[in-house]
Amino acid sequence: MALYPVVRKLLQKRVVLASASPRRQEILSNAGLRFEVVPSRFKEQLNKASFPTPYAYAMETAKQKALDVARRVHQKDLRAPDIVIGADTIVAVGGLILEKPMDKQDAYSMLSRLNGKEHSVFTGVAIIHCSYQDGRLDMEVSEFYEETLVKFSQLSEELLWEYIHSGEPMDKAGGYGIQALGGMLVEYVRGDFLNVVGFPLNHFCKKLAELYFPPRPENVQRVKHDSIPPVDTFEGLSDLSDVEGGGSSPAHSQQGHGTKDTHAKGTVAGLHSSALLEVIDGFKASKALFTASKMKVFDALGDGAPLSAVDVARKIDASEHGTGRLLDACAALGLLEKTHRGYRNTELASRYLRSDGEFSLHSLILHSDTHVWNLFTHLESAVREGTHQHPRALGSTADDPSQGTCRSQDQKLRCLGAMHGLSKLSAHQVATAFDLSQFTSACDLGGCTGALAHELAREYPGLKVTVFDLPEVIEDVKRFQPNGPQTEQVTFVPGDFFKDRLPEADLYILSRILHDWSDEKVHELLSRVSGSCKPGGCLLVAESTLDEEKQAARPGLLPSLDLLVQAQGRARSLSEYRHLLQAHGFTDVRAAGTGNIVDVILATRTEP
Ligand SMILES: Cc1cn([C@H]2C[C@H](O)[C@@H](COP(=O)(O)OP(=O)(O)OP(=O)(O)O)O2)c(=O)[nH]c1=O
Image (cartoon, rainbow, N blue to C red; front, top):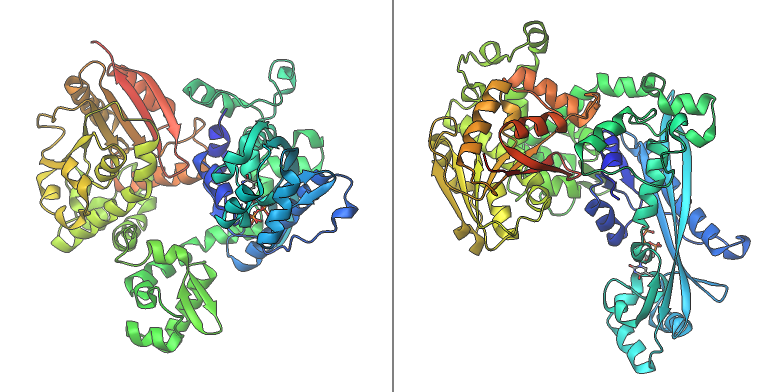
């Protein structure tokens, strides 16, 4: 049971979690879902007495939280959400509904009620599908609830107060957290544990599967309504794409025919004029971000107090009028917050857009602005000729198009910085998509600045990682190295993976390498890896993949276009990667979605 097939369908959607609960965020991101968090401002003050059951109350509160966020995000952003998820967890005991305690005394009275007894924990969940008709927001709500029974042991006053003084009860329904210290109070749990922690993941998956993968009418007898298809096989994934209604929109199978059904299913019917305008204007949003980054707006704002447009203009040496317009555009894009005291970086900007942050995408943005932008102006030629546009855009004729990208030292460092930033974004998910603790040595082929290597070292203290990359790359990686004990686990070896002997390792890694190359070159490289990998050793591949129908809009097809213009390679589907790996003696090919920009594949080398 996993969310993966549905996650693939949701990757191209803007999913918003309307919750401040760290537990909910963790449960959903662990399941591989990619989403933004916008906490709801809905006051949980519905009249409990007006609901026939406690779960009706929880579902209504969940729905109101999600509706509040859907409306606010729609008003605030240029890009409105596609799906908003809201949830509400309550504890019900003896006809009473318990929510989060107001203070310690309240926590004490809640815990005393639960002491020695069985109670119910209900989580109501609302999934709101937003669509837009001529700028108007239409919302369809799917909702459900889950109940879990929990029994507390008989606990002494002293123990209850000790627990209350720990501070744990205060932000939790019923005044306890089963996942931490509160676990010690619990004698048994009947039902979904995660439901108690705040989010019924299993039921949520079933609901999504019901919405996105309804069984074909002729298969109703064979396909169980309440189960998600198997996901860790490639066959399962490709079968899913064949399921009628298995497109990227939820199929409202239970709602019968009529306008709603067509509206939800049809990509044409689903694309409204406002969405079209968004696409038409997309380049303006990119250029606003590129310009603000280039002019170091996000550095000027730092993490400090808000600054007025005049102050920012002074810092970036630009006109007040122009700076004000740029700052407003950044605020509309959700990159800055605009308050009556001035502008300040949003969390997103502080983390990714400042040039000095650990996860900075500053170099990637500059690279996109100068290099990729330039290449994309030749998209029409790329389509006509079916080949990359480096000669036109950069005057480069090199075999390896990336050679033309980094001609000056500045360009080279920007390229390395861009790759470093991109790699850092998904390094943790790539390193942890599979348990790699059985390996003692790994070789990251084309591992560049070592961002993934260091993440692997941090995650697996027993692993030595060799980063193998071209000498001209290795000579400049020093500035990207972190501090810390795990740096000793990482070594850099210069070489060309098409020409030189590959370093020995139990685990070879090709992270975002294969897409850069033609099928012929991919076969050549895989054959070299296969020749170096001992039987029982493994190969880990991380790539952004196309869905099996090659219809996924983002993030599948835009990278595919990217590769047409920029490189000689191409995006591939998971089954294409499986066939490539099998052709070179790798079996037991398993895939894991990270919910991030790449999927991860692990394959084992068998005896030749
Ligand atoms: C019973 C129980 C609840 N909880 C938490 C889950 C929820 O976060 C919280 C119940 O309050 P909620 O109002 O459901 O959620 P929230 O206020 O934390 O976040 P938001 O409204 O923005 O979605 O209690 C635990 O973490 N462990 C437990 O054992």
